[in-house]
Length: 324
Image 1 (cartoon, rainbow, N blue to C red):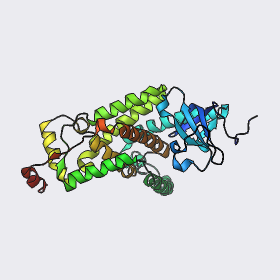
Image 2: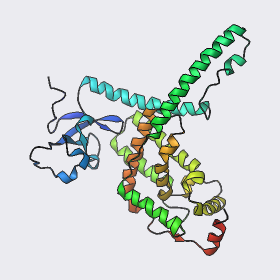
Image 3: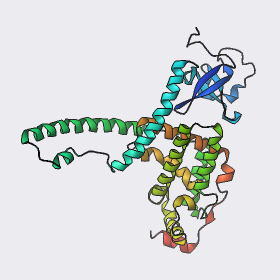
Image 4: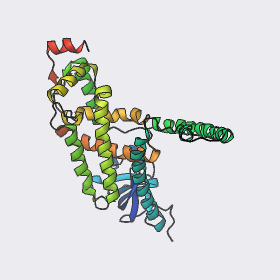
């Protein structure tokens, strides 16, 4: 029997984490920090992984462009126990997204008024008092749980590739310092970006459960974008343009009019938005993993989805925008 703590060897079949889920994989290379680096270019290994054993992983059914180096703790042996864990993670992720979707229908706060059900029927005074006491205790427990959930939500960190951090800085400078604007409507728009990413992601031969999760994420991001653009994602100088474009294209949603420049702003704002939702940690992990994949996709295709130059605004526009 193989010791679970022993390092893998090349060509070993295994399970590897990609985001919060496990996928069938194969070991392509093994890196040992204290041994000669035969057939390995150390520069291709992320710096944070160079101090311990690491593996170059190929995910079965995925293109080689998805091959990546992983630390030892994210690679599991091909055992019945771990296969069971793989199935449980997929089912849990799917169930979490379904519950999130269902939970949204309960109301904005997600809280239950302890007196609501009792108000619908007459109860003896003693029974009502006991029910109220239990409800108060339950409310206190729920409040404590909410505080814990909020803290975990506030700890969400999305890793943005350096090239997109530069993109964000240039975007801010163009609009706020140079008084320039993104030409609207954008082509490709945010809908095209998300659909292209979906097609790219589907090349992995997704299961039905994974496909449903991907659809939920794309739909959720589209909704977030449409709801937050006008109130959160715009700089003050862009608000008049926003009003103008909505008047010029009645009936169209922001994801049909704006592009990658504003979609990228959404991703850096999401940690704050998530803090005000009732998503559980599993749903957050799934969303985070997909967003980071999408950010890598945008970084790789930056020249396709981001404009090279912004429009100079007119003096008339500048005068109007200052009054908004």
